[in-house]
Image (cartoon, rainbow, N blue to C red):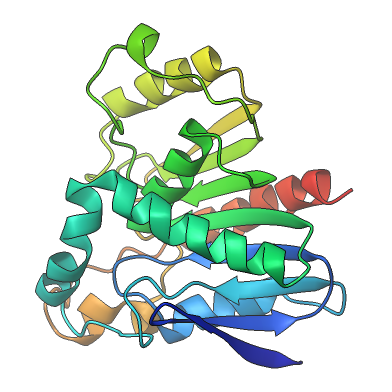
Amino acid sequence: MQARDLTYDGFNDLLIGAGEDAVVVVPDYHNCTPYARRTAEGFASETRVGVMLDLYGERAVPKTGGEAFERVSPMMDDRSLGLARVQSCVDHLRSEGIKRVVLVGYSCGGAMVIDAVRTGMNIDGAVSIWGLLNPMSNKPQVMRPQPERKVPVLVVQGGRDDLAPSDLYASLAAEFEAIGVDWQIHLMGQAKHAFTLREEDNVEVQSGEHPALLLYDADSDRRSERLLQDFLNEVFV
């Protein structure tokens, strides 16, 4: 299938497929891994573009969790940086003739996707898979600006994800209710963080940092994929 680079401002996104719709993969903190590329390829077709967003530039792939944490920390400390990175990608896709854009984010990428919904980014849908659910602002909901653009959002979390404690589910749901978006939050029982990453796709497992930390859950992976495809079918009607 046709693939090409979209290069701008030191970043090098990968576009696969064709058409006026795009699904943008906002990856976890290991950035442009083979898993991220394969996921983007899975969204691509003759009528839809799959995009692998390059978080750091030069399609860098940190080799350890510590290195990845160091690279992504500025975006987590100042959430406007991650938003600006995603917005830049969306803007360039629009300039390429893309009409509809759905973001699909993983881990820190999930946080960026949810922030895009919170701020009313000019997208058409958003999906967070094992994303980070921390609030973007500590301000009470009544003091936060309400986005003018409201897009549907799907959140799929592992019920035993230590990076997304259960108290965040209710607060996120309340936040979505206050914004007035069409939202879904699904919990995968017994699943942990990174439940769609097989051992061979998990950079930290492969690096030997956590050789026993096998987080993949086949049932949750399959069920989340079905939820994701149903969501895309609704957005791209």
